[in-house]
Image (cartoon, rainbow, N blue to C red; front, side, top):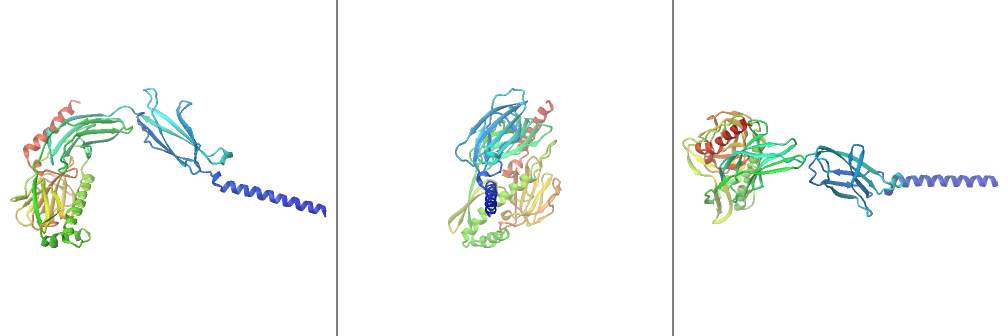
Amino acid sequence: MRRRSNNSLKNILSLIIVLLIVAGGVFVYLSPQFEKNSPKIAFENNGYWNLKDKLNVSLFDQSGIKSYKVYYKKDNSETVLLGKSITAKQTSVMFNIEGFAIEPKIEKIKLAIEVIDNSSWNFFQGNKTYQEFDLNIDRKKPVANVVSNSYNIKRGGSAAIVVEISDKNLSKKYISFNNKYKFELIPFQKENFYATIIAWPIEVEEFQRVNLVVIDKANNKTVTKVPLYIKDLKIKNDNIYISKKFIDKVSIPVLKKSDYTIPSSNAEIFVKQNKKLRQENIDTIKRVSLKNMSRKMIKKYKVYPFKRLEGSKTFAGFAERREYYYEKEKIDEAWHLGMDWASIKQAPIKVSNAGEVIYDDFLGIYGNTLIIDHKLGLQSLYAHTSKFHVKVPNEVKRNQKIANTGATGAVFGDHLHFGILVQGIEVNPLEWMDKTWIKTRITNVLDEAKEVIKSK
């Protein structure tokens, strides 16, 4: 009997030990204290470094970061650049890697990041992540020279610029206006040379500076000033009185056709059409223009003066600042950014320069609208038309009939709204209708640049 009791006791003890081991194993496996996920490393880099900018590193782990180190690896050796042990629990840690001295001839380096978490896993050593990163070292700023440019620019107007850019790791290049507006550069003549047309947006009163900005993949940056004299533009102010008839016959139908809800008051209806819908239409014009403008290398470029609608009279011009009144109260204001020409109803519209149709659709206040791209970021716009004779992506020839005038959009009478766009920004069409202006501000600039480029 005693043996049986002893055996039973031993069996019970063995079972208890097994259960304790299993329970301990389950605890270790399930307990957050023994989590098994390795820390994560987020290292912000694109594979290039100029050794001046700080490199940002972020570490993440649910049990907290215990320590980290950064190594510079050269041949078979490692040099610790920085390291830190962390006592308080931090599930995320951010730090910077700063530049350090290396031999000038070295163009590639390897950095390694090691991070250990606070987990008790791995015999209380924690989970470890070790990653290596290859970086190309580039400490040289890009070459960025202005080859030729227009002598001056007028508010609401345009100017041409030709530049030379060179960098083996080129990333970004553009012309900036007042450090706010950016204009793309188009390949010109041969490698490393680019041309563009820029605009001084009419809504910008103060001219500050035009720069050529070039940035490489290592974030080396060169900024070169484009020398331009400036001329102001005389602004015409108009007061326009809105009638209930206009709102009923024009504003409401245009809003409905553009899928807008109709406000309750007449003043709100007009403002929604004139401000919100107008801005949406302007944004569409810019988006379409930038997306579809030709970016092919320019070898030859010829632009003829744009012509007025045949037999027409001008009813509105560029840069008219309009204030709108309803029942003797001012309710809104807006710029008129084109030329309004009227002759007979459904008059034929001809294009003055060859190009490609990039837009042919109803466009809110502009009505049925065509946009034609003439390369180098230059486009022409034809609004309120009644009929299209071309469509996307037709190529059109100079003097080809492309549409008929109409009264579509936010207008009462049949006419053509003609606009000139520079990378989606409406500019003064009168400049582009002037043969002398085109020669002195555009053609001569490109020709001068060609001669310089030939000698390179």
